[in-house]
Amino acid sequence: MTRPKDLDPSSNPRAFLGAELRHARERAGLSQEALGSPLFVSGTFIGQLESGTRRMHLEYARHFDETLGTEDFFTRNCGALAKSKYPDHFAEAAEAEAEATAIREYAPLLIPGLLQTPGYARAVFRAYQPTATEDVIDELVTARLERTLLLDDPTTPLLWTVFDEAVLRRRVGGAAVMAEALLHVAALAQRCRIIVQVLPFTAGAHMSMGGTLKLMKFADAPPLAFVDGLGMGRLEDDPAIVAQHELTYDLVGASALSPQESLALIRSVAEDYAHEEHP
Image (cartoon, rainbow, N blue to C red; front, top):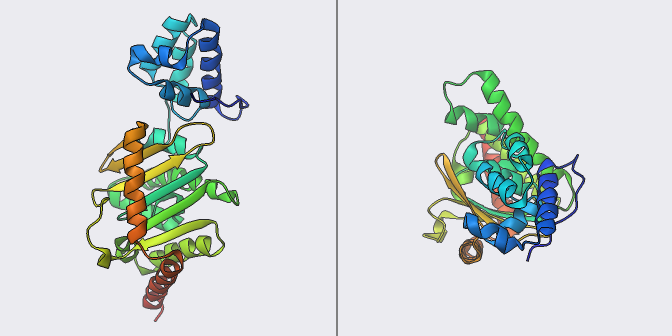
C-alpha cells in the first residue's frame, strides 16, 4: 500500500488536498481499497491521490465528500486545482512529472519539452497553432520553459531520454534554432545532468514506433506511464501495462547508440546546422 508523504500545504496544494484525504479516510476507518472500490479505481490510485502524485477529479471529490462526511470540502477545493496551464490531455502527466524522481522518455519526432530551448519551443507551438497571436504563443512557451526548471536541481529527477534520429534531422525553426537546441542537449549530457541516447534509422522497426513514451518513478508511489498522440494522451498506472511499457523502453534503449556515441552524433549534427547558418 502506498505510504503518503507529509508536505507543506502552502508549497503544494495538490499534496495538501491529498493529505486531507488521507486524514479523512483514516478517521472514517476505511482502507485505500475500500474508498476506491465504488469509483472502480484501485487502492494504489487512492494512494497516489493522497501523496499528491495524481490530480483529484471532480467526480472523485464528490464521492469523497459523501463517503467521508466532509460536506463539500473536496468538491470546493478540487475546482481550484483543476485549472492548469497545460492542455487537458497532458496536465496530469505534467503535474506527475514535477513529483517524479526518475523520468525515462522515448521521443520519436521532437526534442522533449524538458529539454527544449525557447527558440525551439516557439517554433513547435507556432507550427501547432499557425494563426495564434504572439501573446498566446508567448504563454505556451513560458509554460513549457517553466517545466525545464526541474533540471535546475543537479541530480533529481534522473532524466534518461532516447531520441529517434528523426529528432536530430527534422528542421524545427531552421538551422540556427536546431544548432542551439542540440548543443543545449549536448551540454546537459556532457555535464552528466541527463542521459541521452539516439536510436539510429539503421535500427529499423521497434516496439515504440506508434508514438512517444514517458515513464515516471516516485519516491512514495507506484510508477506511471504516459503515452500520447495528436491532441490526446493517457496516463497509465496499471502495473501490468506499466511493466509492458518499461519493457518497450528497455528494448528501444538496447537498440540505440551508446550515450557516448549518441553525444558525438548530436554534436556532429549540431555543428552541421551551425556551419549551414554561418558558412
